[in-house]
Amino acid sequence: MKKMIGLLILLCVGLWATHADMADVIQRQTLETHSGTSIQGIIHGKPQVNPDASRDLLWDQAATQYVGFNACQWDSVYPFEAEICDNFVLMADANIESLVWWGGYWGGTPNPPVDFWIKIYPDSGGGNGPMQNPIYVQRVPYVETLIDPVTQYFYYEAVIPPFAATGGVTYWIEFEPTLVYPPQWGNNCAVGLWGDGQELYFKSAFFGYPNWIGATAGPFGAAFESSFQLYGSAAAAIVWDFETGWQDWTHTNGAAFPEGWDVEPSGLHSTWTPPSAGDSSIWVDSDAAGSAGPWIQDTALSPLLVPSASMDWLKYGFGFNRYIYSDFLEVGLKYFDGAVWAVAPLKTYTVDTGPMWDSVDVSAYSGYDLVQI
Image (cartoon, rainbow, N blue to C red; front, side, top):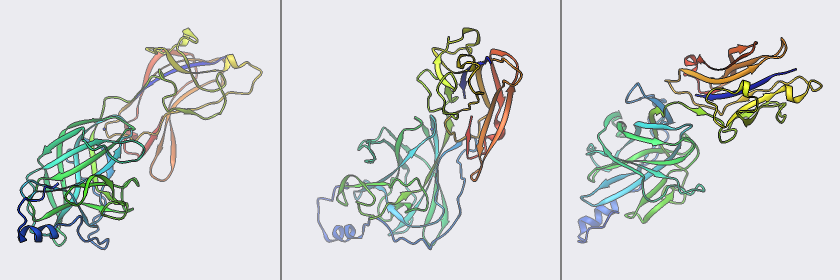
């Protein structure tokens, strides 16, 4: 049998006042690293706030109930500062353009902050938390919406200057209000109710932690995570050109090339080289495997993708050389609805085709939790 296929696929300290009068001593004793904690508080379900409906949800660590507030605040008057940041890792390159987060007040009458400092930090590597200095700092206006007047619990929305995040890279984000004490403000934080299992980090020279420290080792004593959502837009298309190898694709039959898919030089069979292929493409070649071998069937699978709301088209360049009637090339999607995976064949080729570009409409699958090509 003779079958050759080439494929190219393209598819977010406080300085203590120098005067030490009694009022300062009392005020310092009143400041706390966190408010009281109660998981018996307001249960409000998982919202999808989205400050701009045209943007995609890139990271979802939404609060589902009131738990308690962990201190995060900049007060230049007192002065006093406490900071909290938590991690995020996007599935693909994207521009983060708007934010939602949850928090509230204690220790005084609620007084809306002047603005919020949005800070993004690079990861220090090795699971050791954020670097000390941010790579993105913006003071932004915001919208504050009351959830519960008894606990003074709110959610917040802001549109920010875009931050270009690289997929697969760990970042840390902070939401810090500019707010004169009293009152105190803090993020709504919880253990095990939301998040990805990576605890938040805390920093406050005022409370004796001048550098970032994990929530457990620091003042909170447990692996708290803050509550927030990141919205934005995918950075153009997701592209696989196989110029650097498999690029996290896999294949199913366990066989080596030519019996199974593999990255090979694009000119391996020049008659069937995909268009705009560059140096490398993925190939399977039953002709080279020999007619005496077993029937070859192999499926190449992309990395798992969280589809954006704007996912519309799958475009691919390929060449398919059919030898006998039973040879075929099928392009499709696997999709996951939160419980089970299903397979959707999108296009099947049963005659010599290409080399050429082709595309299929995949917008019907943009609402699923995960997809795989």
